[in-house]
Image (tube, rainbow, N blue to C red):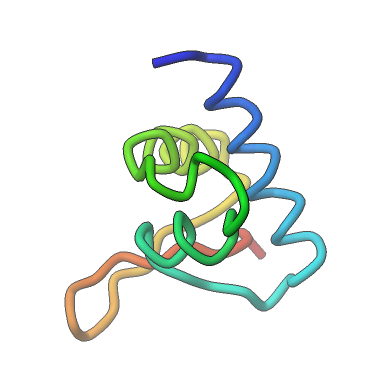
Length: 76
């Protein structure tokens, strides 16, 4: 995994959440809708690694829904 690319994706996630503080989505939704015009749209592995990094840093949190899907949002 290219660390620079993962860092850019992580920054993009944080930027999106700063602009949309109530936003919450799944890995697939983030990869498709939060990065619609970038090549990362098709790279869920890169988005997942960036999400894991942000969760570990305490910047975003994971939430398991009733359907067992995990969604991500800004840590409050």
